[in-house]
Amino acid sequence: MEAIKSLREPIVCVLGHVDHGKTTLLDDIRGTSIAEKEAGRITQKIGATEISYNILEREIKTAFKNIPIKIPGLLFIDTPGHVAFSNMRSLGGALADIAILVIDVNEGLKPQTIESIDILKKFKTPFIIAANKIDAVPYFVNTSNTSFANAIKMQRREYIEELDNRIYKLISDLYTYGINADRYDRISDFSKTFAIVPVSAKLKIGIADILMVLSGLAQKFLENEIRLTYEKTLGTVIEVKIEESIGITLDTILYQGMLKRGDTIAVNTSNGPARTRVKAILVNSNRGLKESEKVVAAAGIRVLITDKIPVIAGTSMIKIDENTSEDEAFKTIINESKPNIKISEHGVTVKAEALGSLEAIAYELEQASINIRSAEIGDITKHDVTDVSTLNDPLDRIIIGFNVSVLDDAVQEAASSDIGIITGNVIYSLVDDAQKWLAKRKHDLEEQRKSNIPVPSKIVIMPEYIFRAAKPVIVGIKVLSGRVKVGDTLIDDNNKYAGTIKSLRDGDVSRQFVDAPAEVSCAIDGVVLNRHIFPGETLYVDIPENVAKQLRSEKLDDNIMKTLDEITKIKRKINQFWGF
Ligand code: GDP
Image (tube, rainbow, N blue to C red):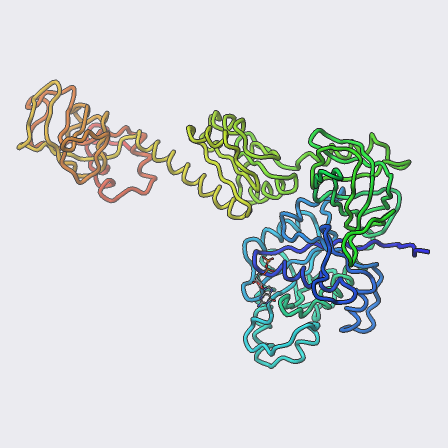
């Protein structure tokens, strides 16, 4: 008879910055999961790897005596990363009960490490830190396939010092993110301190230590979370496959209860919640997938369903039985499909592949003080582009796509609009790009605003270039400071009106504005030469008082400031308080 479990396997997810060793660590764990170690026998197909009680005990006991193991094993989710972590939900929050944050001990915290910490904090998921690549620390004496506790005994003083320096640096950097951490073998109270386990995923050093610390934490602090009950049977669909010959299969992490062949289940589809039946259940075994009559949580399983329905990955599977009605299951499924994102009146538009990643990017945007006006699942469509391009605020005309495509007609539509589309699959670079886009657009808008207000400028009418005396006056001018623009009003040094600039011409090229220093020909309307203005005379661009005040608060070029002072002096001949 099969033993009755009181606890289920804790579900473990691996997170961390790219290249810090997540995949290598998971490979080690997969290697460990095989009872008789034979090369090439890693046959797991469903997205999770189980470390059974026996293997856990064997691995831990080789390095640490007298550690009682109360959990029935560990279930590792095979897809690493914080995006997978956010996409895999359970009804209580994150599917993973506990996580391993992998950090290259030589590189320290990196953007995705920080994103991972943020997300783990948001989901309140406990985690341990694998300080990886300890073999790349100087003075390393080569060893492999052993615990860290053992490996460190073989190292020289210089190595131990180098490693300690890196770990101290890691501890102090983590502290700035509110994480109080220490090397696991120096911790007295695990409820207050995050454990750092030094490892080399490449040389399989420290795997026993990782398994021991994970098990210890889980059985001490997660007992409630991992208590196995049969009242409800719940799973998270992590991958949907449509196989022509057999039908639809759902790779699922079963995290509560028991599922049997023939059970009725509720799942989420693109048309809303649906009911279907379990036609067959496949589970991992050392020899590939095998059929199973019934499965108890926690387990990675492949469920073949009886209906051809478009199930959405990342959503719940709920068994319908005497404890859970169809109505209740459907309500739960509808509720969990609503993103938990703060929507503002103004802000960016976000699209992502799945609910979890949508929330993950929304969370990071929020951290970066970028508001969101719309957040939806799916590719970027033509409709999204037209919607965004008609928004009033130019700063809202941006779409951020996370792990999605821009559909062809959307690309075409976007080409003839002024909207920004930023896509990618790394959250921090997307947030970075969005910030840059917004900064540039703000700058452009500011430039545009500036181009409409007059700049304090000074010109001289060049006596040797007089082309026309009136209607309009056409003369050569020397621009001594500032920027002269078509439409500017000119004054003389007694604040008398000296005409309006009708056009500016540099050789054959007509210009809307000219920056100092320059010599150009200029048409001036509204005045007559030798009556109102004179060859050799110095003129200024007229500045309204409110503009002068505003310009004083901006950092302007020295020459322009000097001209503004001169203009102020002219104005104060008439009004001594001008510009105060
Ligand atoms: P991921 O992007 O976090 O999944 O990182 P990978 O597991 O793919 O590892 C990235 C690179 O680091 C690969 O070239 C690995 O061989 C290397 N690597 C992983 N773990 C270790 C380690 O413990 N020591 C050393 N020296 N290299 C490692």
